[in-house]
Length: 222
Image (cartoon, rainbow, N blue to C red; front, side):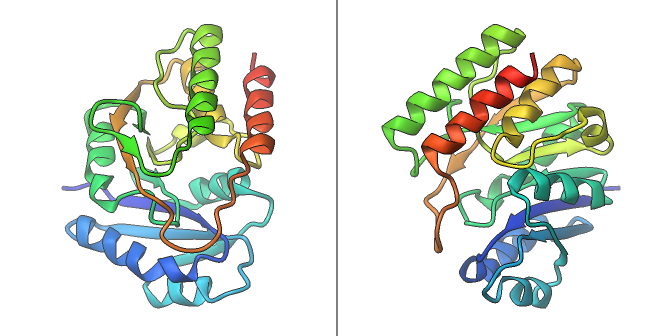
């Protein structure tokens, strides 16, 4: 029997992306039993309305991406849980690759834009350099072999989020996951992923400020 899948998606004012995103998810994993959990930061548009119309469960959190993701992971019922962004930068046709990584016996499966077959349409040079610096620091400090650090398209075996004891409220959450997976000797796999441009709406990432948060996260977990 195929595993039950939970997909956790933090949102804030993403109404223009909801239908296409949820339709894309359904078209790829329609042969699975699954749930979509939208963790909304009290959007001022019709994000919640459209999500519910498409059958998603909606819960609320307004502290930040990390807090939203933690709340969604805690609410998820699936044997395999997938974190995904709402801006259509994560391609639904990669969902089965993330599912397969967990089915193969890994605890965490992480999309990487820097493996062969991966890439990005939305990574200026400053972000490329910053990401590579953070990856190098984490690999040196923690003895890991990651190729990507700040990318949120990931899957988890049930129960792994509790093992990770995540604490970050903001954009340091992906870095915290990678570090704690290594420190707790979890079986982690990277798979290639291609990041598309945000389809609609305003991006929430702020390179300088969020870079400082990521660096703090790296040092805090030493």
